[in-house]
Length: 417
Image (tube, rainbow, N blue to C red; front, side):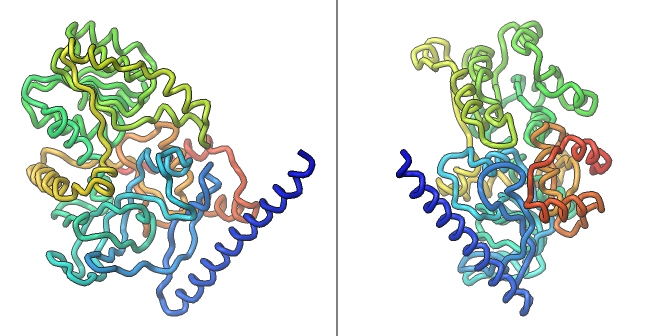
């Protein structure tokens, strides 16, 4: 063992040196870009882990390749999947450093070769396979959609992930129809509120929801039956609807999987679209991961057959970027924009944050403090408190900090519709 230690120490030193060289090369490239106006601000994830792995840096501005649009970003959406990416708590995580973020809104600044249907100056929203949290982003035209009149940039950044996910699960997977019932977890979040709004477009749909108690007053009008996320919601649902529900939308996983399937009526559909129970701390915890999966009951196909129940999963990002279904999503976006223009649905924005406040924004999501979507406003200046904190953290090597006070402080900046 003693002989191995010097080798490991040398290996660690080499890794540190390589990382330092990589960062120095990036900074040098950004400096060159700054001289001719080709640099931009972006949120950089230097490695997987806690909030200290995030910082705002200067990077060389992206330029559109064939089939891509270059977008001057106005707003970016924050989603729970971004927390899991930061922790490296996803399958096949990409290499770091990277710029996080999967959805944005902004103005078309340049067109790559063979791009049709868009013009410079168009207001657009888009999906991006990472690199959204920056002043400029490029993405293939098939992932870009024009923003309708009456929709702000912040609302547009809150629209794609939440409403497409909700629509696909309700109508494409579960075939929601008149008179059905739906149970949705995290009812106060972006997807939860999108589900509630879409259910209201179908006659006589009953929506059951779980959420933190402090959110109930704000969302009680959008959910028919609302339960505390820590209460025994299974018994509460059965008390109201002894047969159970037709659709269960589960973003929690763990023990909620078995509970959800047990609540299904015959011909009912359970859909797993997230696993937020695996995120219990600031960094990835293998104990939490193992505990969550340990709590997932084994699903017996014969039992599903005997009880006439359907178990499904849904991942919008995989559907878009790995399985090539951009055409399907385009059709869904068209339907959703029609509903928006008819004033039947409207993105719910919780609060606006500067790029430099990304750590505090992420903490708010982690604490389940948001009602609706958190947005990074690229043009927003950080509050003096956040700016000072950011400088101090940078000088101190970006050490860990207690975010409880910051989270409470942030309550003062809700986005009022």
